[in-house]
Length: 546
Image (cartoon, rainbow, N blue to C red; front, side, top):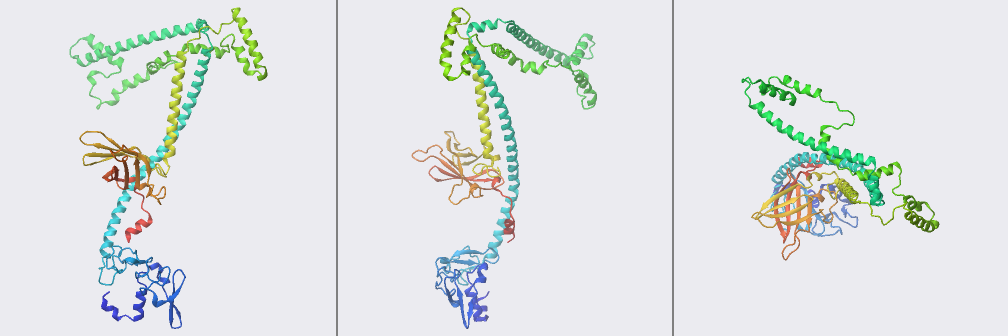
């Protein structure tokens, strides 16, 4: 509006315009005077006082809440609203009104007397809308990538649950095996060496040892035949590919034909014709497959002989012999019943029983009916080693299950991979940036490092500690995931331990944009990631249309 046009307006309109200066649209309805006869009054917005309507925006603070001076700097705690037609309205502190400075928040210049600040809202609004449009386009594309991260988290959940269930079954089986082996060790320890040798003289054990030796011999001969067969096959292959079919040497021709039939190979003259007659060339293979030998139940296949025979030959036959006694109900030693009976007696009679038992055992030993406790114990080293290996494998299985359970618990934990698991995909992903004489690398959720370009020591800049822990930041909010802290890195010379803060924003790639050392040995990485590209909301779309 031109200044001279104000002279054409009635005085009460001009006065009303001045009274509403700095009032936001949502409060305009409350800036209406109350008429009492010829006088006009107005009540402060907090209801604490009623003043003359003429006292509103008169550059004197009457109301305790400062609401009577929305368009001046008289009340220090009030706010001035800039309409910014063509852009977005905004507030500034009243202390910045009529200070002679053009505030960027007031692109229409309404905070200063007319003519002081130009109205640039049209230009600012257009630039703002273009910027918002570009940001929304980035978020829209990035959110599609982010959705693949969410799908990955669901697959991880299913995989971990299945592996945990499988681990539980494996642990149960290993616990039973450990219990069996521990019982075996205990039973072996209760035997004397002489008693064990006596048991090993049984026909059953001797037959097992004979079968073991025969099986091992067959394995040795089988390996020899396989080596000879391989060498012979190579010779025949060379003969097949190198002989002249036009040279009528029937012995060579029959040898080649026989090898081709035995090995299931196409005739050498047909090699290279696969594309012309694939059905004909595949007929020999199908016939060979149909003629494959049907194994009887319990008979081992070639693959089993190759991969499982060594395990079978490593069987602990002494352990089987002792377990056989348990299976048939035989006691581990002649006196074992006497020693085990105390477990079933009342506590009051146990001392008398043990004294009687020891006396009875000594008589049996004198008569040669029981072996003395001083006899050499049976060798349990092999059983102990097998038990130790089984216990070690059981502990490994338990630790693996615990690791998977911990990973599953972190999958949808806001303090780790987010409530939707969107960060799980990036766990262990390493990104880097060359800056100066170093390459700065961070492996997400793991460790950040400083690596020299020209050789030298690599320094740890810290390990992942937490997300944004600033005061007022809500856990699980976008602002919470905008920063990652890596702490307790290698100590600087005459300084603190190195640390890194990742300042992250939405981007189409997981990348480090820049590296800065804000304080001594305290670094900041500017990072982009699709994990922060949230889908557009209705308010985001509306903001683009403003």
